[in-house]
Image: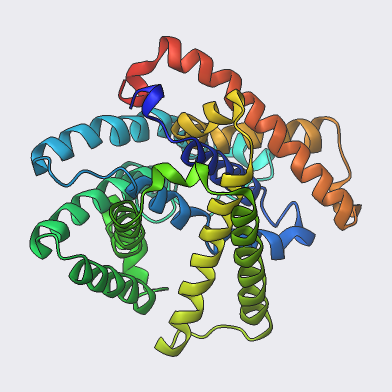
Length: 343
């Protein structure tokens, strides 16, 4: 999409979602006091990415053309950058003693880990890219079968979501290859993004009066915090009666994020993060590990003895440094490795 066609708030929303990905990946092992915040982020940050990805979905193309284009822009990056994720199991396979000296567990089978990344099973590798790929193909089929009937499309998408909730925790979901275990959730939120774009003039949202943007943000945040509080104080079971609460919490988190993106001014660096979010996602794990290694293993920062404000400050510092590493790396990739991101 050409720069003049880009929608400001969507780039900002992607940048905000990417910040949530980095923050969510800090890990409760290192930051136990931040666990409630990390858990809250995990209720909506990936559905937010799926929904944003569906805003520009074009069902008019042929399925073969869609598969070819998305394989280039999603699967090529998956396998190129998954090389970084393969470093750990390969070291474990070839030099298990070196792996053990680093304080890592050697109980898991490295061949199984490598195969899981190659087949994109469970949370292995850059799972979101394969998940989005299969969701786009599934959505194409749904839209063809429903023949433009938005009510029918919404019903099918909600049924997909219900199926995802009903099968949550099932072992087979993590063993299915190519993220087929997540196909229902991914398809539902990508499809909801498409329906939003078809129902509303999303290009005009940047021009909504500020007072309305503030009101939407405040309402979304209040709803999210209230629903998250209910979820935490009354642990959600897996019965169908709990599904509306889970769904509404996710929607409230998404709405809050989008409302926030409408309020944040446009900055070039922020637009770069949103526009090139694929690169930031691909490098986030290795960048975070590099920064945490430097702070906790080299500098010996005493994270275990820190209180909540200090944990939060250190966590934000790590996220900023890691995103800075990705920002610098992105310039090199955009200039010299466009092929690695389907360019």
